[in-house]
Length: 288
Image 1 (cartoon, one colour):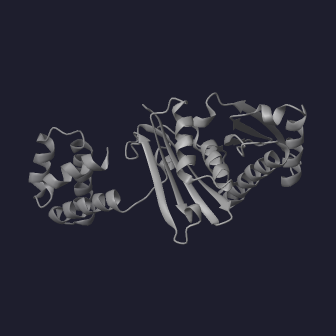
Image 2: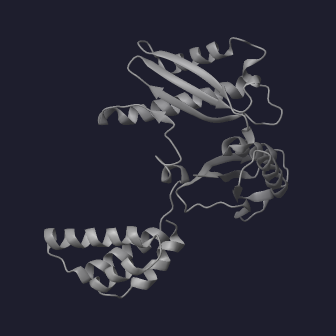
Image 3: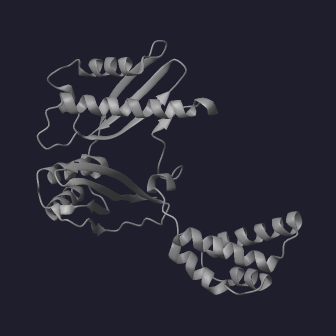
């Protein structure tokens, strides 16, 4: 349910009594009426029986909560779509007291892999090609899956580079009783992933290419990957200007409020001679 559809229904019931609100929601022909009807009806029943609150006052509270959630919050597009079109990049179980250690361990694994790739890959375009790193932990095994757009740059030349990478990760984290297994999978359309595209734009900005040329070139590469829409945003001292600003370009559709729309997102920081620039990319892949 998008914000526009919810607002269209809320404008009709604002200021109405409880009985009038339920009647209007039952008769209106919009899909957004049913979830709002269920929310108001269940909240009114719980408040009346458990807390003894007035139903008329409760409607005002529910509408205010919906409007605050509609206008005032920003949420990560990946977390917003978990269990619908997106999945977790780390899968493991831990006790509450050991949860923070598990998160720090995942961060160290990802940083170790990226540092190894930067040191050992001869990259001309500045693109590492790592789309995402998935980590699956068991009692005696840690499975790491690296999704790369250009795996030949890492594999060719030295056939034992994966073994070297595995040894480096084990030394970094001091694994003794747990086995580590690293596999690399190839992505068919690398420029359809926001992380690889952000690395490409960052390389262009380091080489002092105009940000508009870099964004337009990235959009052209994305169109070759059969995506339905893309939005690129760059913030900071763009092109060395004294005053920081935000510039963005959108091509195609990017429905951020639609949960069933599969949208890939990433935020990336790049250091230039003028300072740090922030890059955000939203890619509309498909709609389920």
